[in-house]
Length: 478
Ligand code: AMP
Figure 1 (cartoon, rainbow, N blue to C red):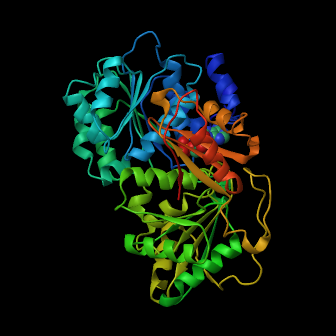
Figure 2 (tube, protein in one colour):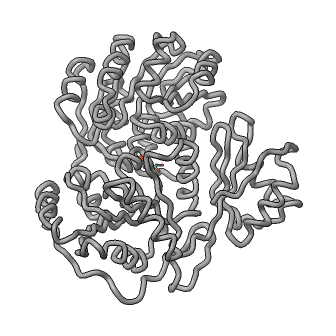
Figure 3 (cartoon, rainbow, N blue to C red):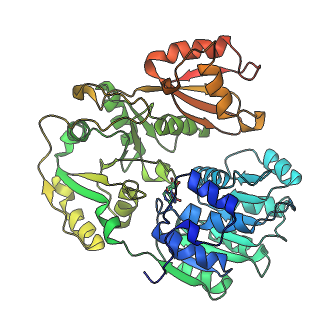
């Protein structure tokens, strides 16, 4: 690497920002950060190749936060992402990194939600907007989103946005930005359309490509198991029992299959949920919240449904159906082995699908080999961060130890994680700190994970007691 900078402290950043970065536990920069943050701080345009999990969100957010002028309530950075989920994740990371920027307003302007609250929020003023191209364009055309003071534009997962048909919207947005606006394109792949977009709208951009470093390559172990068409579900159960992941995504090629597989897993007592295009947005949100907080261990999803979802510490990805396109394969398995952790990607291959292995091998410059299905005792579970406890190995994969309670209030109601934790562990709640898992606060709803054995008690105490002196609708999600 030509760049000598390794640590965030080597960068010219304000102390408050460095403090937050340290609090988040980021010490060394990831390769993409080391390469792109100095370029972005110098004000140049950038085209970066990187995938989810590389730390690219922080790579573009840190320079944005350094440049933000808190005194003006004008939109100074616009970040476009392909999906609503990705927008939410990016906004979450920006808010985390910006938590010492008192009064920072980060607005999510994504589709699939009412536009009026977004218009209202923009009227009050926002510093950073994270949105999907369609909705952002709509907000621009309504003259609700004003870009005259915007100094940074980010296209996150540019190739996906193009795949999803946002090309025209993106062009119109790019054309609406001030000429001097710095632009940052991040993409996993570089089809001609991105090169064209860059040539048209960027000025002498710096290209940053992170070749799969040796460490990163080893981060995903790939395995291929053969199973007959009618034996795939049994094979999947064996795989899950053997590898006993904390959290895994199982990919299917069709949504009907996603549902069937999820049902089959639940019938054997393995906690699973399916994510597919037929779900309402609130149902998707619930499924994802439950998965992130370990109330559901296995998520069964199609590629479309899984777009943009990001879950930390996913230790296994299973291809229930082998994808036909090698780049889909690479996208799927890229969801494990993130930020330096090793991951495992397992594919079930039917005899008729064996030809796909050659395509995958050619694309990834590897030689996929079929291994015999695992048998024998399941692996012992790694220590569980949330409960600190262990089950008998027999049932490790089956039991999800957490349950999720939803509370009908969120950030907009000024609800904070501490309020929920306080209500649960205070006098009326009586729970111990480690009975409570992840707490997620969304705009109008919050999810809290609690240990299964205390879930009913927690529910009762939240229903009977008050949170911050107020009563909200509280439900146990199943
Ligand atoms: P991303 O590629 O932006 O989705 O980031 C993947 C994950 O890595 C996120 O959970 C970040 O919080 C985390 N992360 C980002 N930068 C660093 C870093 N320098 N050190 C450790 N973790 C990081």
